[in-house]
Image 1 (tube, rainbow, N blue to C red):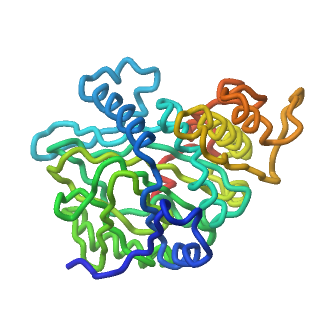
Image 2: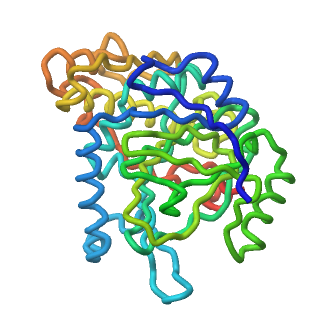
Length: 344
């Protein structure tokens, strides 16, 4: 039986940023809903780009991609078919997602929670195909050994409606981000019925509309069942304090500074879009900045200011100048790479 619980939320159409009350709600409960964070034009761009990408998968065109390992599938036990459900590195693949990473409201909210030295880490598209949506098992996003009490954030941007009625929404266990590993493990084992199903005892559904997003702590226990609903797409962007990444990994220090470049270039890219050029761009003032030799920039955000003034992405840290948007974990891992080390 699902638990009745009032989830914390804020409306981006009303509030210019989250406040300290929202920060404390996120830290305590492990989640925060932000309504209406994407406008109609941005939402349409994201829907168009992701629809084209999903069509590429269903028509097997993805096999021609230089990085076909970025496309993930699950095996459907009832039909013995592979069901596509996830694509990695979508900031690199889709211009609209690159612009989304530079969203000023989102970055201000992340900064309030994590401080000025935050970095983006992982990015992906997770989707439930129409009529045959794959389950996402109950889990935590990473192991606690990479957290050490820091508020690591995964943000899900919803391009389609998710509801209990449709059977396609995310379910969460509020407050489980504060649990020890042993208790979280017991809960996950119970909710998965020893790997045989998907229970919702003690969990709460998160119903979201197109344009909404969900901040969740990476240690929050969450999952979603298999379904036969209409298409449901979610873009995920993860953020971590740079200090935590430098201390605990799992990536090498170079990864932090490369991701800083990705973030600045994404902010510069956003102001070239029709919906981003009217915004006040986010100013990323991390004090862990490394300026490359030979750079003509006098400040870390000169490229953003240049782009905002002339409508181009020109600048010393622009999106097309020495910025690599696809940074596979295996290439920047401390020690021997194993994705399973990240999952609790």
